[in-house]
Length: 78
Image 1 (cartoon, rainbow, N blue to C red):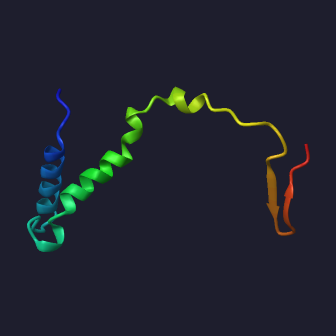
Image 2 (cartoon, rainbow, N blue to C red):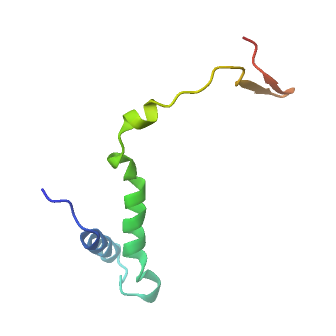
Image 3 (cartoon, rainbow, N blue to C red):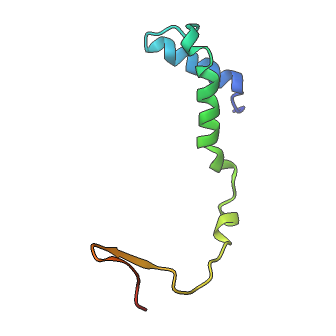
Protein backbone atom coordinates (compact mmCIF):
# COMPACT_ATOMS: atom_id res chain seq x y z
CA UNK A 1 0.00 0.00 0.00
CA UNK A 2 1.39 3.40 -1.01
CA UNK A 3 1.78 6.13 1.59
CA UNK A 4 -0.94 8.80 1.23
CA UNK A 5 0.29 12.18 0.04
CA UNK A 6 -0.14 15.55 1.74
CA UNK A 7 -2.99 16.24 -0.70
CA UNK A 8 -4.66 12.95 0.29
CA UNK A 9 -4.43 13.87 3.98
CA UNK A 10 -5.86 17.34 3.35
CA UNK A 11 -8.74 15.84 1.33
CA UNK A 12 -9.49 13.50 4.25
CA UNK A 13 -9.66 16.48 6.63
CA UNK A 14 -12.00 18.29 4.24
CA UNK A 15 -14.22 15.19 4.26
CA UNK A 16 -14.27 15.18 8.07
CA UNK A 17 -15.18 18.85 8.15
CA UNK A 18 -18.09 18.16 5.80
CA UNK A 19 -19.08 15.12 7.86
CA UNK A 20 -19.21 17.36 10.93
CA UNK A 21 -21.65 19.62 9.08
CA UNK A 22 -19.43 22.55 8.16
CA UNK A 23 -18.18 23.92 4.84
CA UNK A 24 -14.45 23.32 4.31
CA UNK A 25 -14.46 26.20 1.79
CA UNK A 26 -15.65 28.65 4.45
CA UNK A 27 -13.12 31.47 4.98
CA UNK A 28 -12.25 30.42 8.53
CA UNK A 29 -11.57 26.82 7.48
CA UNK A 30 -9.65 27.25 4.23
CA UNK A 31 -6.24 26.60 5.82
CA UNK A 32 -7.48 23.99 8.31
CA UNK A 33 -6.84 20.87 6.17
CA UNK A 34 -3.19 21.84 5.62
CA UNK A 35 -2.79 22.81 9.29
CA UNK A 36 -4.26 19.50 10.52
CA UNK A 37 -2.13 17.47 8.10
CA UNK A 38 1.04 19.28 9.31
CA UNK A 39 -0.01 18.63 12.89
CA UNK A 40 -0.38 14.91 12.25
CA UNK A 41 2.99 14.84 10.48
CA UNK A 42 4.56 16.33 13.61
CA UNK A 43 2.62 14.06 15.99
CA UNK A 44 3.74 10.92 14.17
CA UNK A 45 7.28 12.08 13.30
CA UNK A 46 8.69 9.68 15.87
CA UNK A 47 7.71 6.72 13.69
CA UNK A 48 10.56 7.68 11.36
CA UNK A 49 13.08 7.77 14.25
CA UNK A 50 15.19 4.87 15.41
CA UNK A 51 14.68 4.45 19.18
CA UNK A 52 18.22 3.12 19.52
CA UNK A 53 19.49 6.63 18.76
CA UNK A 54 17.74 7.88 21.91
CA UNK A 55 18.51 4.88 24.08
CA UNK A 56 22.27 5.23 23.51
CA UNK A 57 22.34 8.50 25.41
CA UNK A 58 23.76 8.28 28.91
CA UNK A 59 23.62 10.50 31.93
CA UNK A 60 26.39 11.23 34.40
CA UNK A 61 25.86 9.75 37.83
CA UNK A 62 25.79 12.02 40.80
CA UNK A 63 23.46 13.75 43.19
CA UNK A 64 20.85 14.68 40.68
CA UNK A 65 17.65 13.82 42.43
CA UNK A 66 15.62 16.05 44.71
CA UNK A 67 12.63 15.64 46.94
CA UNK A 68 9.84 18.17 47.03
CA UNK A 69 7.79 18.42 50.21
CA UNK A 70 5.85 21.02 52.18
CA UNK A 71 9.13 21.84 53.95
CA UNK A 72 10.93 22.76 50.70
CA UNK A 73 13.23 21.15 48.16
CA UNK A 74 16.27 19.13 49.23
CA UNK A 75 18.57 16.53 47.71
CA UNK A 76 17.62 12.91 48.29
CA UNK A 77 19.96 11.00 50.60
CA UNK A 78 21.89 8.15 49.03
